[in-house]
Length: 330
Image 1: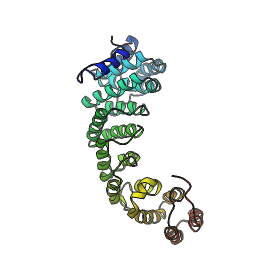
Image 2: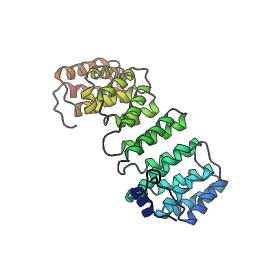
Image 3: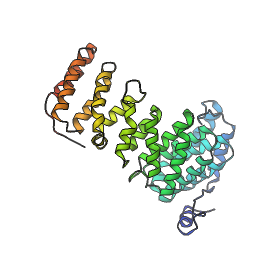
Image 4: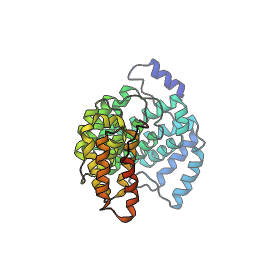
């Protein structure tokens, strides 16, 4: 059976077609325990039940893989190719349990990303895909993937984002994985993020906003989120908080600053928690005196409509914006 070292050497010396790393069964006990999942019940999200039969299999398995080795991790990855969805789902939980080892072992990290992508490109069970993306998201703080790998991730994420709720949750995990990678956002990911910002659905918008600051085309970001600055938009708060709390994007979106302020002032009367974004704005951006005065005036006007118990929050913010403030952080 091929070792991780051999897999890495193939990647360095082999042809483009042969360079894709493949996982091998290196631990017979792990395979045996994974195959036992074939008799268990599993829901559409890839989670197993709490019935006696499931507990009898899953608890010992969890204890076994918590002492993860490279052989266990690679075997679990190899079982992504099993014909039984329940086996593939349990294999994903094994990969997640091995996340610390994966992060500390470069060859195993490369193998995990490559095999997961191979699996996701052919996976037909939405719940299994969810568990596999959750597992790869748990190792998201590794080195930046190669450009070809990023392009594949973007393609898979785009497909999942266009699906039903379970598929979109899988897309969120992949976006979170990408958001923890070093370096600038690749063009393929930039296009995906901008499309999700324009789409405006809340389930993926927060993850897309997490990548938005890394996009070179900040004016494109501004144009994409501008339509979400309205009270009936599902993600109005996330967009307003992004604009008022992230200096790089705010600087590129000066024309959206006032609409975002007005929206938060109006919505704060309904939900005072929305006003927390003004704390971030005060700390992260040096505002013109006229803008500070405008915010203070808006808060005073809104205070009269606010619930009695919320007025102390308004008083604090009115005092904050009634005085000059120096920029304290970026």
